[in-house]
Length: 247
Ligand SMILES: O=C[C@H](O)COP(=O)(O)O
Image 1 (tube, rainbow, N blue to C red):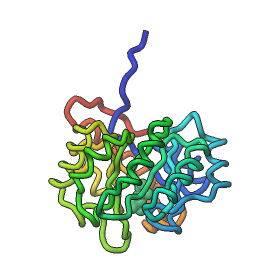
Image 2 (image 1 turned 30 degrees about the vertical axis):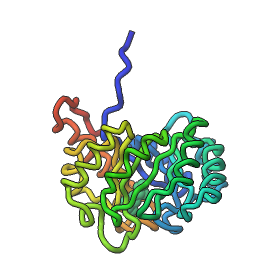
Image 3 (image 1 turned 90 degrees about the vertical axis):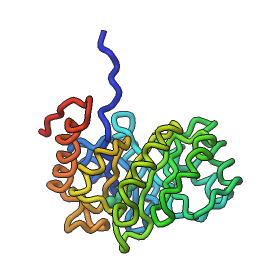
Image 4 (image 1 turned 180 degrees about the horizontal axis):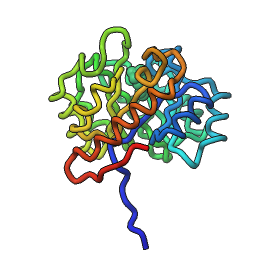
């Protein structure tokens, strides 16, 4: 009997805005296909009809995540959006924490969703720092994971806003708290090796996958291949990781 191996990490998350893009990244080795409309903000929600097409075509065979959109942090706003997004059939529901402070009513709402079996990932924004103090409360709410991303895509990338030591602490503290942990924020190919060494569970990309690195442009096949190869071919540089061919 084959042993069940854990996934080789870090995984490659690719944000897509259409079924055509989802098929492209699926064919080129994305581990997580993230449904998002970049024209509607950092975590813009993809239109329900397009989301449904992607779930129908790829659900069950690929890990799909989707954002609820750039919404105010109010429990009566968040709760129905989580329910609708989860009901659409994605595996992971992402919620942007657009604020500096944790809010107990919103946390309770997230805990209810988690208790109902929704895999909730809270996206924290680097503009507010690494927010390490939030991690235990987010874990206590039963969340599946956390992610650090950037809110303002014009004012610098993740590693412009936070030092690698802060990112390392975020990954380590997330792992200690049992949270599935991702890093994103205008990441470029040059960021991949430094971030691999921090060993997040996944790295997220949109802009670097697009024509002319414009995140609201369509995906570029060569750029997707290049990012995927940069992740997979460098994983073996980490201790105890198998070498993975990039084909
Ligand atoms: O979830 C990840 C984001 O879509 C990353 O987008 P970005 O690389 O354009 O900042």
